[in-house]
Image 1 (cartoon, rainbow, N blue to C red):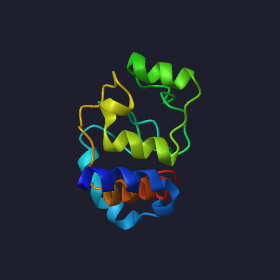
Image 2 (image 1 turned 180 degrees about the vertical axis):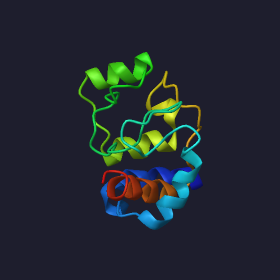
Image 3 (image 1 turned 90 degrees about the vertical axis):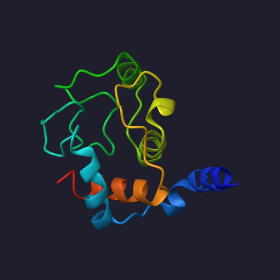
Length: 123
């Protein structure tokens, strides 16, 4: 039942895409072990600076997986829907990704993280 509600909530997409960037600033702390929000500062994962709206696999200094490069070559962009899917289940959204995290389970945390990335990690 809970899974069905989660899928229904995810299908709603933009209807609940506002998010709380202040809470997203706390959620992203879990990402800092592998990611930076500083432009051009890659770690085990690519910089997340300006990721919302950026082409998939396009951070020039980062060595992406073949799966991520192929997705980028198709013209895929990190829009909010793609980010939501990826943050929920990275290895399902992009089989072959190097992302080790299994994903965020709380849709509100995902929206808050996206709001933070959109509003504060692109300045």
